[in-house]
Length: 158
Image 1 (cartoon, rainbow, N blue to C red):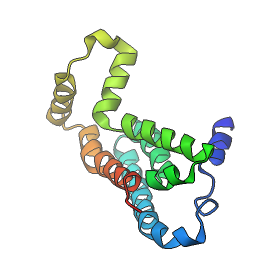
Image 2 (cartoon, rainbow, N blue to C red; image 1 turned 180 degrees about the vertical axis):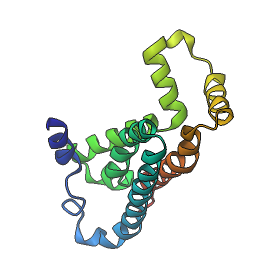
Image 3 (spheres, helix red, strand yellow; image 1 turned 30 degrees about the vertical axis):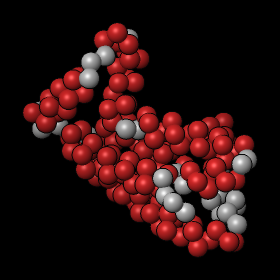
């Protein structure tokens, strides 16, 4: 419950902190954001039938990132603490939701930082492909495209 309150205080309603003069600028990235949220919803819905655990982990990474996504330029112009905190959250979620970064963060947490090798992610992906894993399909067809759309929103030049 506390997490929801914090997210509401940070994100709030997107229309509460956008002035009337920014409505035209907001249009393009807002449409892109709605497309991204729809793609995440459809992808996670389909993936939950195939592999629920993968869809659940993906939802923990993608849903907050898609809901918090707002162009960094707008937040930088605002100059408020709320906007600054949203920039920090977007940067952290954008980094952690990138599959190689998430893999190395999880590997570091479970095995320690001295066992990190750059080829490990590639070996893991090859094994997923060889096993015909649904996780491979999820990463390639749902997670990476939605992550790229969220980054496009964050780097939007409004």
